Length: 270
Length: 270
Image (cartoon, rainbow over all chains, first blue to last red; front, side, top):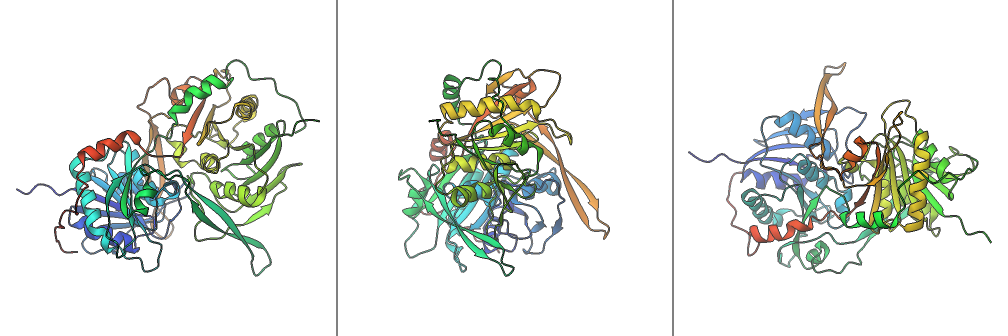
């Protein structure tokens, strides 16, 4: 008797018709039984948003051949919640994969990423999870070179497990003549986006803004995801959802005056 | 010559007309010069979402007396970015405060919280930041008892600084006959929301869902924010935006096979 195929849940943030999720479904079908629950439109930059105070739609999708698929009106985190508690119910997925995102989610971008929020939501639910992103924003981005690496990483995750309470943030260099140097487990580079706001006037002479920005990375550590990607490695960062900065608790307790009654309020006009 | 008053930037996720931000503005006016940049409507549950592929509005607001205030069409994280790079520009805030949120943001809720995403966005920008939340979802929630504690915490932050690369997540018990027990620096409890989906039919006989859920906390640690709040303490959790699970990097490197060429692909029909 053949061993049971693993059950793999797929989501993303670019929406169910995006090219990256097609690549992910194609590769995952080689490995296991696939169920897709993905947004019905783009949800980029949604971070860990969930739908509060509003309703959700969930409809069967025919986006993929021979795959049970659903499209959802909500965010990537909503998709994973609906998948686990409504679509799959008693079917426990062996792995949750998200992506392949059309653009990088390395370094600080992990916080803004809907792709990674789907993976992190799965980790919160106790499920092994990986988010995949391709470092290529081009309209004609080629996802084909990612296939063997995505397959390798997923097979390793199924064989050895993803560390508990974490989700892996995998970023893959864009396709080029330069071969992929390998796969490197990294830490998140300490970098950020430096925003600029492009101020314009609408046809009614009302002001509006486009947010633009440059990625600024002063962190030159060779153990960072940015170093790995700059040297054509695939970066793998294990991400946790416990945000506690444990090393600062003693500092606050030592320096701050928090005991006793609050300091009397200086009265001032409200 | 009097010393210069600190510049305090205020945002939130309940929107610029919410009662919690009125309390925060009132208390901050006793301490410093205040600038408000807050969403023009509710942005609860928006996590660390930013506005991508769409435009932003920013308009002067008259919501507060004698306070420079702006309302923004974007998310809490957008508000902080616009405040720093457009509204304040060369004026460097001494502190960024967010809230007071109408409802708890303890434990795992920090990930979904727009209130905390404003504070964390400020921390990413290198600014000391605190998010305040009141553990009371009631329509008539009373914020008045929070005032002396908010003032004490803010004065301590201005005097001693917030640890670098962190933002503080402060949750305050609801007003009751029981006095506040004190202020406790804590870790994030390892808890989660257990979702349920309430399935209904719309007037056109199409299915929709309301997400509901229960908070499940198996983590009984007395060093957690949930323990503190359950014992009527104000909880203070320092939160970092470096998500790297450092302790798992060696585990993955030891157990996973990631070197060499990818394992040959098992061909299967797409």
